[in-house]
Length: 187
Image 1 (cartoon, rainbow, N blue to C red):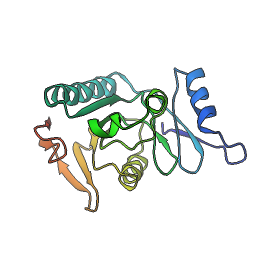
Image 2 (cartoon, rainbow, N blue to C red; image 1 turned 45 degrees about the horizontal axis):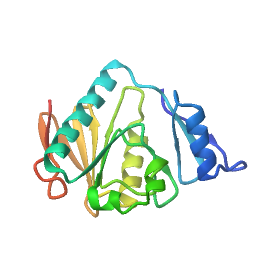
Image 3 (tube, rainbow, N blue to C red; image 1 turned 135 degrees about the vertical axis):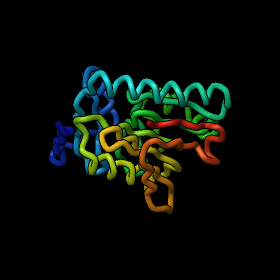
């Protein structure tokens, strides 16, 4: 099942109204597109949830050792420069960029594009929609992104100004110069 998209063009939500909608429905995973469409995402199953937990654990272990930034879960919604409100499965923001935000900005939906994101394709996800989301991340300042696709056993690597690099499993991917020393294996 793909995400449900509701067109709210005739009844646009302010940032505060969207925040309150999310707070009032904590059991729902919601996003908002730049065009003002409300996205209601299906919950993931056990295997996808386990894989997501592994990814965030691996990135967080690396981050604790490096001290270079902050790691965020899929429950965090970022307000991107284009106005979209997105929640990647794993996100990382460089320390200086996060610390430059006002405390109030850090509390709600931070108005910042992460430096790094991971999207994990669950069986209910549309590959095309995830690929469009990854391109949106890049267009809004994300510097490195991985689309992990267990169904097709591949990882798509997204970098600003470069074509998508599709790697078949088994593969080891790295955080490159952005996140030195981060290496994850997929098989």
